[in-house]
Length: 217
Image (cartoon, rainbow, N blue to C red; front, side, top):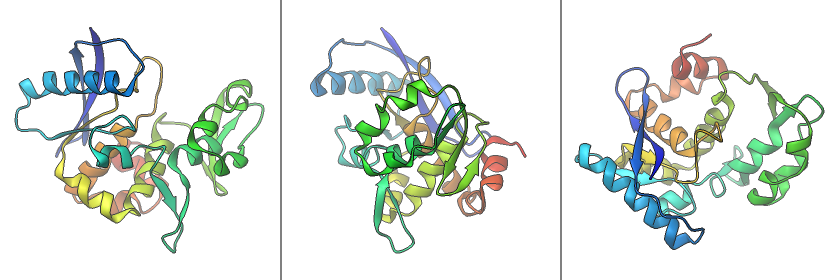
């Protein structure tokens, strides 16, 4: 057995709710095995939420939409709508540590290379973020990642429209006991903000985002 979160869209505060689900987990590293676990997780969730539409957000998703929404694949665009770099690369390249960073060269490598760069493990604790010259504080802990992901998603119009058909999201690779930031949570926040007519207001600036999503100034 294993336990993973399902992020559920809500029309009341907090707009994204997290429900931990116990499910039958099968060991293995193949895509087929991981998809088996995703299916198991979703089946358990649907027993108590039969009217939900759930989607796995990762490169292991059986739905092409879920694959496209992986932070490894979702692209940050410029004002002209041109792809610049993946959300994953942008996130890793924006980290500011006690002993270094941001390592902006990570913007121009693959998502996998950016995530595994040795400097991210040897530069001390994260003290903040700097994305394209704009500084972000490190609290709340998921603030910058969610802000970055949602800003990338809103500029990918087809994906942003398609995701509105769903109201629950998972990421099988995400374990809250080992990691902080989750792409499934960011997607759920996007859908919730849009359905509650708060998306435009939340994205006005980073302070508005913190106030609306995390209820802090």
